[in-house]
Image (tube, rainbow, N blue to C red; front, side, top):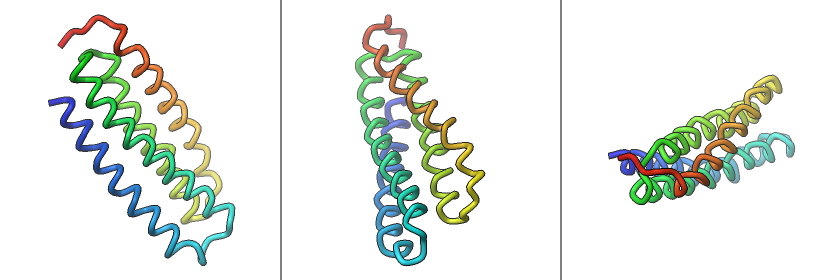
Length: 126
């Protein structure tokens, strides 16, 4: 079941990432300052990257089920919401303080990659 959850959330993040990318390119391009549009695009890029990472986690779970793969998936989800979400909110509102959340998302994403890195080397415990 865990692999299906991560796969489904990865697909949902991919779908919304493409939609947000199109929204940014067409609806926001004329409305946002270049630096705010760049922040929005960074959020989209990281969201799409980590949508694919969640698909990798779903696959890894089928090969090496255990805590590292499980934790990696949830760190990618939380990290994407914090990192990309804060950049979207900052871009749309212009409230720079929202950028204070972004590094916490980045730390979650980095930690997710470390957990995924160790997943194949840990003892499996389904």
